[in-house]
Length: 308
Image (cartoon, rainbow, N blue to C red; front, side):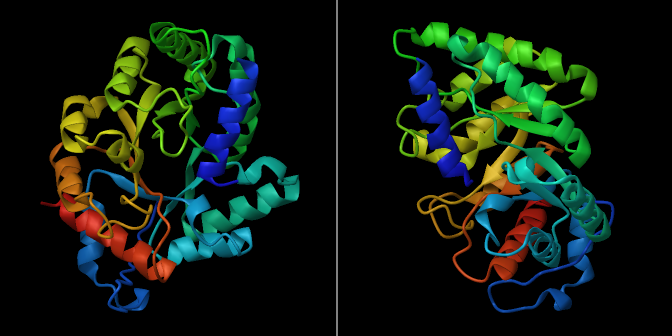
């Protein structure tokens, strides 16, 4: 299930209820292969405060899972984010895929796939049950972060009441994950992708995180959605960097790689470096050409820009 389909599935449900090593790889669009990468990229990896991942739903979807991981490693990445891929894995597949990621030096840094959101008090118990059901799987994957949604606007509920419900839902969810060291990541979605989604506003998202006031609850700052929803990306980041637990990267329009649209990602990476942002930045775009080369180029561009 891809991210767009998932957000629409969640929309319908809510309305109805209401690195241990460095693998140098450059592979830029000019056609340079991963084998020609030089040591300067290794140095950038060592010095850049933030880590880089790939949201796997965007790439290599026609390949078997192990081959997808091999492509990720070929592009120089050592972290992968999942959106429910493991839901139907057998015990043997868990063992097989965990062994493969260990061989490649890859970790699963974030998972997604909850069916209910935090903002609808009418499905609060189902939302918390979703999280409980995810915890054993996350333990098997050694995955430390889980994406959560607000859900859709609830008919008959005032905006303030739904805001308060998001806060309360996340507080309750934090109680479930606190002892396990798992971070919950609340995501914004633009209204072009889901016209019914509640949490499209980045300033409101930061306000929710502030009111929850729990170290294991952070904001997933998706720049693609935020740009469509009003922009002001760097100012919002600079004012709230400590509340950000994950950043998602794609350009507007089209959800392709940085440099294909209107977002100045080089300046964003520089700002992240200047702020000493030390969590994950995940590429969540559809490559416009060869995925390995473009992903590799995007990785190196981000690391170099963060050095100023």
